[in-house]
Amino acid sequence: MNILVSTAETQGRRESDFCFVPEGEPVMVGAACDKDRGDPDGGCGCLRSLVGFRSHTATTTVKTAVAEGMTREKYISEYLAAHLRTGFPEFRGTRLEAGMLFDAAQMYAEGTVLEYRNGRLAVRKDRGRLTET
Ligand SMILES: [Zn+2]
Image (cartoon, rainbow, N blue to C red; front, top):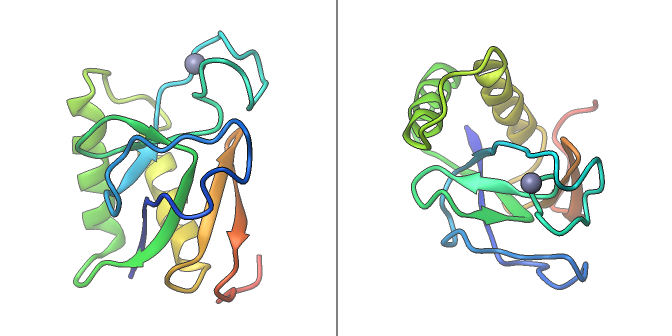
């Protein structure tokens, strides 16, 4: 199965890009604050970034990578554990978010680079779409 991991590929395509997560680290949806008020290019950056499972730093660019032996259930459990390590409690939507990121990762060929903006993923470097959405 595929998962979404951090990548520095295509960094700089947007002026507001950043990538503090080590290359290849799995990523999750981070907590969003009120500072950027719906603006994905705002000063905080939480609306345009995903957060590393271990580093808890953020990146605006991610890519699909093959995770041998991964299952949807295992991924959701690892995602939840990573979320809880940030110190936040489990939110009502945490497992749903995990499932959505996992499902999204299955839609793209390995190595597809994506950006995250306002809760949506978009392709930056296409390696082929596997399923129609
Ligand atoms: Zn923020």
